[in-house]
Image (cartoon, rainbow, N blue to C red; front, side):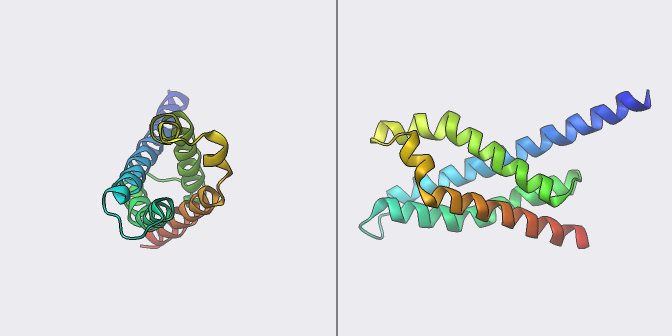
Length: 136
């Protein structure tokens, strides 16, 4: 009985971390796409990457807050799960739906150093904010 109950808690916690990561991904994609509708600089790719880099901060904080409000895991584990889920969603949805129709491909998307910069940014925001929330 105890083992079954503990397993359910672990599954629920992992599923909830995935749901929070999906929320972060949805918000990130929304920031990225929205930037194309408000042209501020001539280079729209640079503008979208800057917007995403700035928009990922409140998105990651919100996802982290929602997770730690209802569950607990080590912040480093949560950060890593967020990066993995977001990367998988980028491979399965972002690239085929938004990048390829606009002339891009998997190589240019995942070969862009900005992708890795934003992934590292996401990891450290979740790690830092998760540690901050756990100190309270």
